[in-house]
Length: 322
Image 1 (cartoon, one colour):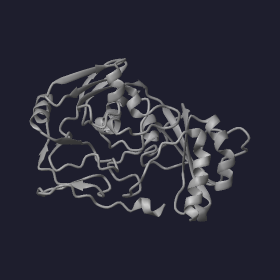
Image 2: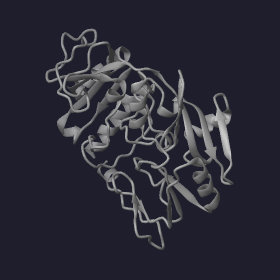
Image 3: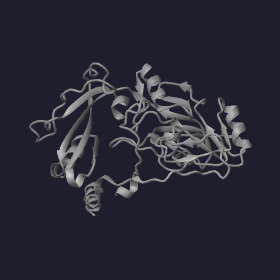
Image 4: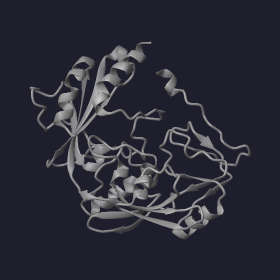
């Protein structure tokens, strides 16, 4: 498995421009001949129509080479505002970061139904590349109910809920057109308690199905050489009406002992368990703007059915031993 972390820096231009574009972990880089930064839909349409080849950059949080180009690069950080808001939906420009959407919705006492690991991603980047969700709820892209795409000739394609093309464009990888705006459904904001603890590998394998049956959001990590440490870190997120943890909640606040009861059959939480309570978006992921995810790293993500997770874990452990 160690080989998976050795990713070669990719340089994708024959004629290098003055400034390189790099993704978040700096392992993917390119030198586009043009870096276009539209600030309006008219400028975005013109840029798409004028380009013979282009890619679009969001926050650079994909570990893949999806953005790499030696032609035109569209950077959408100047195209990042709320277009409209009503009682059930919010429409945003493609370059608006998730943290900005979250903050805006919080002022309305609303929230996105689900999020991934970091809030620094842009609306288009997070959805077009299939950023996962959390727990049993769908991915971020599953919350899309409308979208405007810019076709290669610069025309706007408006996709509405129920359209087969919208279902294809939710995770379009940029292949169907450049995303201009996205309309998300939103829900009443809620609070969750985030509970973190460590189990021995054997205990984790014995209790995973219980945790999955009890909680909608179960996350677990194998840190370091699990074949040696024989331990697993588990994170649960439990809906609560309790107040936000003092001095910063889950983004910079002090952790405390869990207030939610342990699962049925457990007399107490494992030793060392700690928790925080915050609004939904601050428990589902981290901010990401201040490198709150533990430093740079490169990863490979695989989608495996939950019914097969223990089998996958067994196979992963076997690889670690070789």
